[in-house]
Length: 65
Image (cartoon, rainbow, N blue to C red):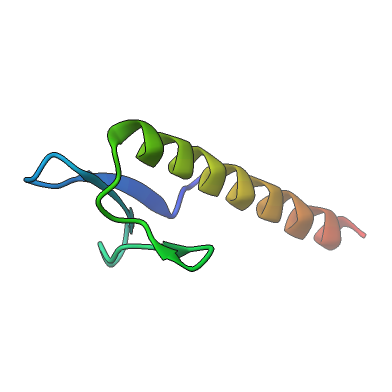
């Protein structure tokens, strides 16, 4: 599965979740995903990857119908 997002370590020790293509921070549930601790960034990325995976499965199921 190709993921759209990645964690980006900032010089101040915080982490952001960014779009791989544009390197722009992601807004998720109305919050910009910047200035995160590493643990929070990992959790957020895992949630986003799970959402992407579920969406891809739904698209595949729709094509098979």
